[in-house]
Image (tube, rainbow, N blue to C red; front, side, top):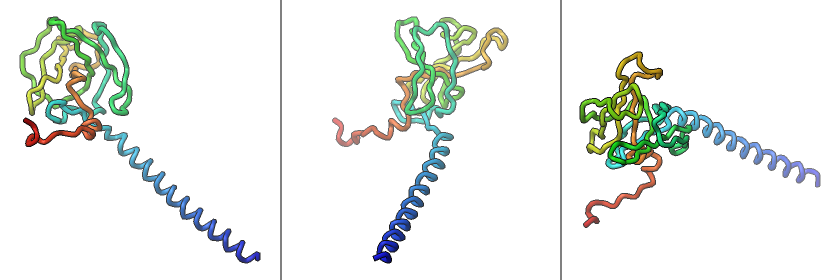
Length: 179
């Protein structure tokens, strides 16, 4: 009777080692893929056409005292980002995030009046593919007249952007089925 018990223990131990090995491999792959995923957090896309506007790794914080409200929030699991609410002279409200770079097109000359960021002038920027309004380029008026460490940045309208993770969940109706 002792021999079958030894055999069962050996089989159990072998099965345990096999399962542990698989779990270890899965854990290792998850950690490695997690590191890769953190390096490439994803893109923010134009909500109208899906064009890549900026990477989430380019987001930065440029706070303004002229914001009506400020909050920190995440965009599809990214690190918290500052979202500020601004009102333009026509009474429209915009939730704005700031970024170091963006693939956009300027459509007008720069303006200093009514800037939400004192010491910076602003220029309207649009999506280079579809022309949708995406936000503004803010550039320092005088290099040493403000206390900001940056000379330019983009203020992008949050509602006009879509994180690529969210875009993967959208179901589009083919044009053939639309009236």
